[in-house]
Image (cartoon, rainbow, N blue to C red):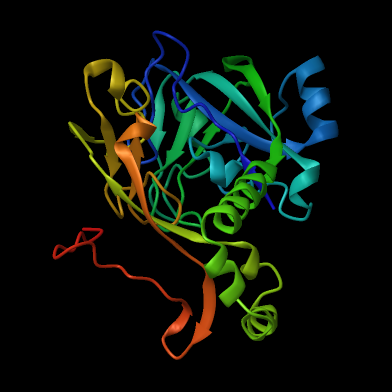
Length: 281
């Protein structure tokens, strides 16, 4: 298991370009290019080269979406890929938003420097946005992003399990071999996980509902205690909501839940806190 680390903030003075934001002509934006480790080393030495085949014709293919770029090359395992984070002077931009567009592969002949496919326009199977830059000299590498193993996640899980055993020995004792055998049948790794129900004093809350939000990573500096990403806003790949609380002291553990097999599912959880329910929407 691995994940792609990203700093969503562009260099100082460079405007952010969200996946659904149309690039403006004459601007400089941060984008990504997925490739092999060997190809990345070559690009760093000699620069980008045009692709001669592709849905938008000749050019260098990039995306604002890191997760999209991290899938390429598609035929390689993730640990053999890298993503080049680049700065692009887009020049004059042409939007190509449907198959068979009259300038789909001839946009450069009409004086355009970059072609842009918006997300969900039917041009890309994944539904994610894509850019094609004609002149490789318009692209400058910022950094190379490598996938990193999710060791931090597993170390955190181990620490939580240790806390459970120390603070809640009766829970550890009742989590018997029958449950472990059942969980192993469903997933060999599931029994390593626990859920922690907590009570949070959220303080002052700000809603961050898009990539590139001006306070995306500086919200606490503006006197907020909690940042909230609503579900379906495009911030989280799963589409689910997420919260970030600045001060750990505002979080109080209520209950630790161990996975188990029962008629209602694998996780047995008390989702009600007091008499109030907090839904994701």
